[in-house]
Length: 217
Ligand code: SAH
Image 1 (tube, rainbow, N blue to C red):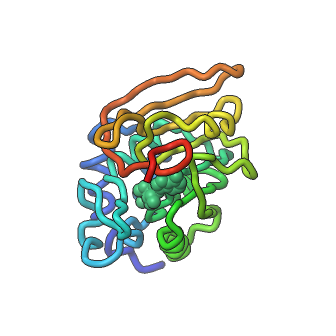
Image 2: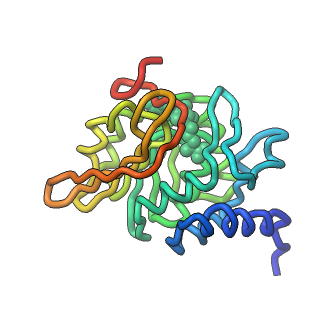
Image 3: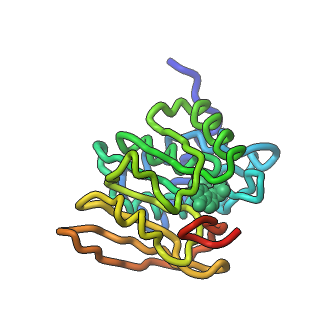
């Protein structure tokens, strides 16, 4: 039998007390968050806090989201195992690893090349083979891989970038934090019969999405 991961207890506790207890019920999301070694995505001394209930710095002024927010946004995507997913804002790569554990294939776009390299290293260490990290302005999406069954934006945007809606498949779901630079609301768009419906969920705070269809640097 393989050695038990010494972080497993902390991870189970995180899922029980921060995610499941607050109403995330999607069993695939809960299982992925029990499985993915979140500590491998956090550099330096902050790693000790990997399973704590808040966001953490990952360098270059960027952050890895609070575990609960990762759980909520992933659940809102209602992923199925055959889905192809686009993420905007790879950051540490943790959210992408959660997506890749549930879905078939993930493309994650990151604006800062050094952060993209970090995400690639973290994802390789965690054994993820179905996640591709690409450097670029994710507000334009990634047309080469379109259409996507699910799209998640993990940086704050003034509005959902139009190219992302175009790249969403029929039946596809898109989740993004939309609002001002200081405070956003989680928005979910669903495309059905060519029509896009919009639902909103609670308030959140993300670092800004910087690009052609986002904020200016
Ligand atoms: N999903 C990440 C956290 C995202 S932090 C995780 O799991 O750790 C937001 C990230 O979005 C930052 O790394 C930032 O550099 C990136 N970003 C900001 N604007 C972007 C853009 N236009 N395209 C791609 N990435 C962008």
